[in-house]
Length: 316
Image (cartoon, rainbow, N blue to C red; front, side, top):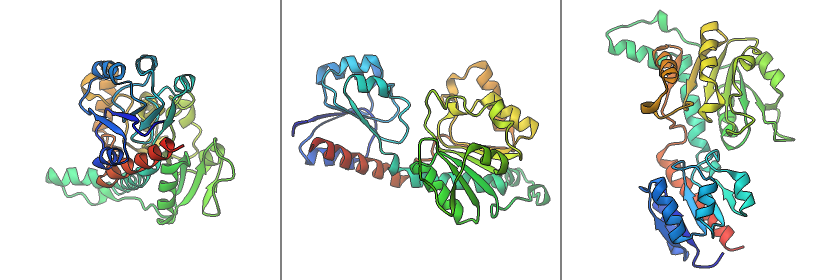
């Protein structure tokens, strides 16, 4: 890439990235309010070498055909499920993300959701707001000595696992794509170990063809104990209908979800609306609006990580 590499940014990012790129000689086109239609038109017009985005649009055949000179796609976040990486490879476009930048944020949020559920914090707060002071009905459970299965031992999985050690948990970690991982404290395990021992299951895996709908009836029935289920990865990894069955059957004692199969609450199908209504009415469920990695610090860290990576690639 040349010194005057053109970078087209279509989502909101920190000035650390926009100003940093400009300072290092990149031509920066920053249009975070653009729609997909406008973006496709601008890609043809601008013909950028680099495209920076979060989750605004899917990077598909139309995008690659519009951006003939595209060399690099930079995802301002961790998940890459809105980018067709196989197609990118076919078009000789490199893809990067900033997964390491928001792992601490996701780690904190995961522990917050877990403690909230185990100690009935949201539930009891809502009762107090309604004039109820129910102590015995909100007797909680301690996290210490619990066995937690962490599926996915990438940046966020590691951040969650390390935090759990501070609470005295036995932490079983599993990642089918890694070898020689884990240690005496963070125990490299297999799914059978997790099915047998876990009190808590925390998901930190990418969404792809293999993981889509992974948490279903068959999966949940293999757990020997009722589990507290945490999903801070992608909503489509968990089949919501089967999650609800798990709650009703007692296979899931509680769950906390930062992601849903459909996060556009104004465009839920009738079945999705029925499932959503069940979740929000259940005292066993905590929902947050995909904010696990969404902190003041991660906003800047994501841009700092991408700036460093883009500079390094440009200098090759």
